[in-house]
Each structure stands twice: as C-alpha cells, then as structure tokens.
Amino acid sequence: MTLDLTYFRTVFKDRMQATTYSSTVLSDPSYAAIVTRSPSAAEISYICNHAVYLQGTAAQCYGLPVGAIIDLRVHNFARALTEGVDFNAGYAHPAPLGELNFTLSGTWLREFSQAQLPDMPLTSLLNTQNEPINLRFRASDG
Image 1 (cartoon, rainbow, N blue to C red):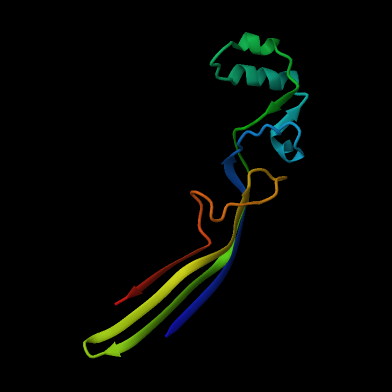
Image 2 (image 1 turned 30 degrees about the vertical axis):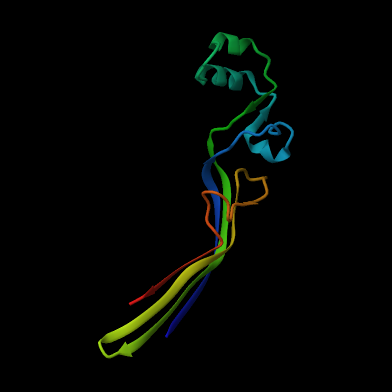
C-alpha cells in the first residue's frame, strides 16, 4: 500500500496579462497603475502618433482635450495564488496470474485566485467557467 500527500502553495507575481476595461477605471484607486492623470504633451503626442484610428486622424487626436490616459496593454502586473493538496493512494495485491493494482490520485484546490493589477484584491476563479474545479480525481486498476 502506498499513500502520498503533497501540500502546495504557489504565488505568482508580475504575471503578463492584459487588463480588462471597467467603467470605474477612472474612479477606482486599484486601477492607478494603468491610469496617467494630467498627461504631459509628450505622452499625448506619443499616443496620437502610435494609435490605430478606425475613425478620425492623428491631427484630430491632437485637438482633443486629454484629462487621463488609460493603458490597457499587456503588463507585468497580475498576481495569482494557487493552494491545495495532491494525493495518491495505491494498493497492490498478489494474484494467481500476476498482481492486482488499484490507485486513486487527484488534486484538491483550496484556492485559485488572481488579480489583474497590484492594488486589486485577489478574486477566486475556482469552479468558474474555463477555470479549474476544486476537486478532481482519477482511479485505475490493473
């Protein structure tokens, strides 16, 4: 008989991730890392010269009053936390034609959360669409 149990806690900092737009981006202090208030003329010029315009031109961009720049590009700001237990149990028993083996292994995730920006609180993604579930196992015999 074998029994294995492994606890893990993994913290990722400065992960590459795009920030999604929120209607509160200018009023929520947790977005401060991507908001430049009262940008300089050089910052405005850079944005106007490097923007892709679906409507309008760079000249029109220069003529608009700018109170803030929101940078939604990919940054090294995201954080993630994964915590849980990996387990494995096995049993082997001699039989007349060989050996019978039974195993059960899996992972129990206690926490799987992330934050897009340094000042945002971690948000749990556990058991949500396209994210890990809290308990999964696999059994086998042979």
